[in-house]
Image (cartoon, rainbow, N blue to C red):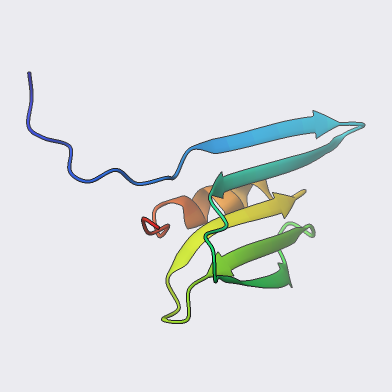
Length: 78
């Protein structure tokens, strides 16, 4: 019975660990977004999905759990 938490934001995360490597994701790849892949600080890869305005709707990372968690707060609703 608290305050309304606000609009729904699709920021649910997922992860899987196989053979010592992790794949972690958050948010969604919304229609019309563009993908950009970069090397993460911890050495893995991070792919972000962004709208034409630059707003990130989702991200997925290989061996980049910390980077994905850092992006979580900036994910916008699609």
